[in-house]
Length: 402
Image (spheres, rainbow, N blue to C red):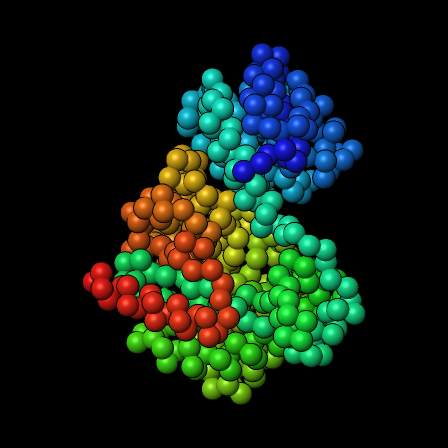
C-alpha cells in the first residue's frame, strides 16, 4: 500500500517529536508532510486551506491551545480529514479525549502512544487510506447528459451485498447498492461517480425509486432461495429526508410489489448531519410506517451518541475505518465494544461493515451473537443471478460446517 500521495500535518510543541514523525513518515514513503509547533499555527493553516491535509497527527498536552481544543475547533469547522492523537499521557486521559473528539464530530482514526513506533503510524495511515477510499473512488463524475441517459434507459441496476449473522450463519439482510449498467456499451459505473451528480441535479429520488422498483421486483425470487426471513436495505441521503412525501412514495412502491415496510431497512448515511425539522419528521414517519432505520457509516460523520440514543434507529453500521485492522487497533476495539454494549442496552443491531481480512473476522467472532458482518471477505456486491449462485454456495458451506 502506497502512502506517497497522503498529505499529513503534524502538531507537537516538541521539536524532537516533529523530527521523529518526519523520519517515520519519510520511511513510509509520505512525501507531503507539514509540521507545526503550536495548535494555533495548525488551525491557521486549516482555515487558509481546509482541504490541504488528509490527516492531522496532534499531541494533547501543548501550551496555550491544547490538542483537545484543536480537535474541537476542527470538528466545528467540519474538517473532513482524519485526526490521530499522539500522546504519552495516561490511557484513560487519551480515551476520554477520544470520546470528546467523536462528540465534536472529528473523524478520529485512533491514537498512538509515545515513544512513537513506525508500525503504529503505518497502521493508522492504512486506516486513513480506508477512510479516503470510502469518500472518493477512481473515475470522473459522469455528466448530466450521461445520468439522464441512464435514467431514461432504465440502467440503474441493483447489486446486493449480504449482512450475515455469524452466530446463526443466516443472511439477515441484503444491502442494495446502485450501479449504472449499460448492456449496450458493456460498462458498469460505480455510485461515487453518479450519486453526487444526482443530488446536485435534484435527480436522486429518480435514481432511488428506479433502484427500489427493480430490487423489490427481484426480491421474491431471492427470498425463494432462503429458508429464513431476509430484508432489503436501501441507502437514503439526508437530502431525501427533506421530501415529506418520501414515506408515502416508498410505501406505494412496496404495495405494487406485495411487500411490507417491515421487509425494508433504510440506511441513512451520517456523512451529512440530520438537522432540519423536515428530515427528523420524515425519519419518524418512516419508522411509524414500519420501516427499519439504519445509521450508516458510523464513525465518519456527524451523529453523536446522544443522537444515536434519541433518534429511532433500529440498526447502526460501524464504518470500515473502524473495522480495518481492528485485531491490532486498541482504539477501534474500545469503540466497538462500547457501541456493542450500547446496542444491547438500547435494543438495536450493529453491523461491522468492511470486513476484508480473516484476522478482522476472527477478532469480531467474540461479538458474533451481537454483531452482523458485511464485507468483501464474506461477499462482494453482486447482481441478482450472481447473488443467487453465492447464496447456494453459502448454504452448502454453512450446512457442511453445522
